[in-house]
Image 1 (spheres, rainbow, N blue to C red):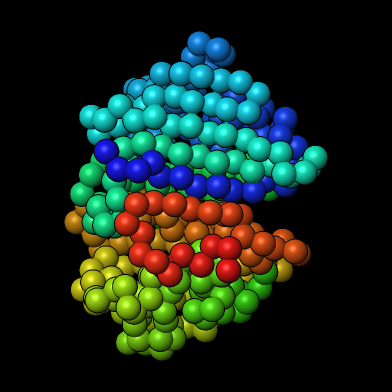
Image 2: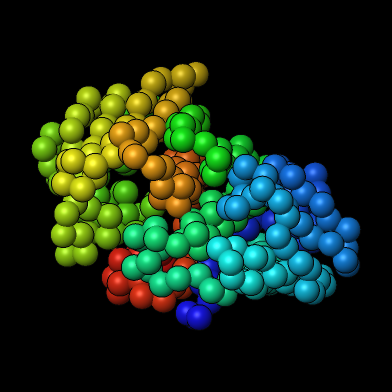
Length: 294
C-alpha cells in the first residue's frame, strides 16, 4: 500500500455550510454523484455514471462528526479508506482536506494502468465542484465514467481573447492549472505537462486560430487529440473542450482536464483570484512539477 493521497482546498464559506453540503443528499447529488443515499450516522453511499465503478454503491460509513467524514470504498478490488476533514480558517473560510488510501503512485496514475488511477482526478474535480457549489457558483460538468463522448461546454465571464491567451501562455497556464507546463505557442510547437524536463514525448500543437481555437495531439503528435473551441457569448466565452481520436477513453485524464477548466473559470471570474488548492500530496510526484502555492 502506498502513502495516502492527500489534497487540501479552501472554501470561502463557513464550516457549517461546507458540512451541510457534504452530508445533505440533495447537495451531494448536485456536486458529487448521480445517486446518493445518506442516513447519518449509519449510511453514506453514492454511485452512478459520475462515480468510478459506479454500477452500485460500494461505500461503508466508518465515522462522522461535525468536522470529519470517514468511509471505506471498495475500488479496483481494494478496500480503500476515504477521510474528509474540515477546519475553520476564519469564520467565513474553511479548509477541506481529503485523503484516500491505496491510491497508486504518480507514475501508475499517469500510466492509467489501475482502476484506482482515476481517484486523484475524480476527487480533484469533485472537491472543486463542492467549493463552487458552496460558494454559489456554476459547476463544471462531471466526468461520465460510462461515456466515450468526451465533450464539455462551459461559460467563462471573460472575452475569448483573454481565455485564449491564458490557454497558450505557459506562465498563465501554470498559475491556474496548478502544474508546470511548457508551451511553444505556434503550430508544430511542443506542449508538455510538467515541463519539457519531465516529458520526453510532449504533445504537438496541430492548429491555432487566435481567440478561437487550439488543437494539440499527444504522444508527439500521434496520439489522441485535445481541442478547445472558443466563441463569444453575452460578453464572455462559450468554451467547448473535446478529446477525440482515442482507442479507449482515459477517464482519469478527462476528469483532470475538467478540474483544470473549473480553475480556469475561477481564474478569470474572481476579482481577487487565488488558487483553490492549498496543497496536493501524492507518492512519486516529481519535485517542481506542481505550482500550487507559488
